[in-house]
Amino acid sequence: MPSLVTPALPAGSLASMDQAVITGDGVLLRAWTTADIPSVVAGFADPDIQRWHCRSLDDEEAMAWIARWRVGWLMETEACWAVEVDDVVAGQIGLRQIDLAEGTAAISYWTLPNARGKRVAPRALEALTTWVFAELGLHRLELSHSTANAPSCQVAVRCGYLLEGTKRSEARHADGWHDMHAHARLATDPPA
Image (cartoon, rainbow, N blue to C red):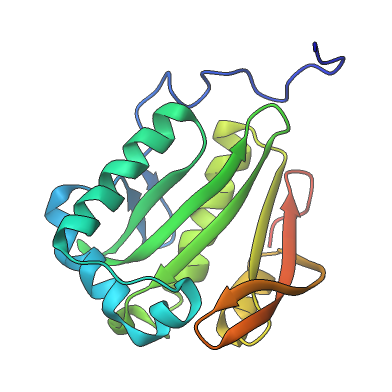
């Protein structure tokens, strides 16, 4: 049935262009390549990343994980960037559940152990947020994390993602069901 509302962004807004290379405060966001397989495997072998993302990967699975992001970009459903600091992969940041018609997406991110405590996640989040609102033209970005993940909450708040509430028992982790904080930032919100 036809919509009575004009889509926020037309279909093809992502698929018609190459994945953006995004620069920010000492970070570079770029598409993943097969040369990054060791970094992906290392990331998903890290106990802290496993705790919050509930995954582990071998080399073959990491290759499929990287390939999936190219398909997600073309399908306009998801996108993921390697986060580099000084030409070294420091983490990942991605857009999930992209809905161009509604102008929304959800954010995910993690950092490798040697990048933690250096503000890599907030710098990457701010760079991606700026690009999404100024260049892509989405209206709303959402971010959720376990209420037990205080560092992720600090990143969200530092980057101007307002806490909108708590979703009870929303995500299942290895240690059971977790309540999840729901944060969001609008294109019309003031800069962080």
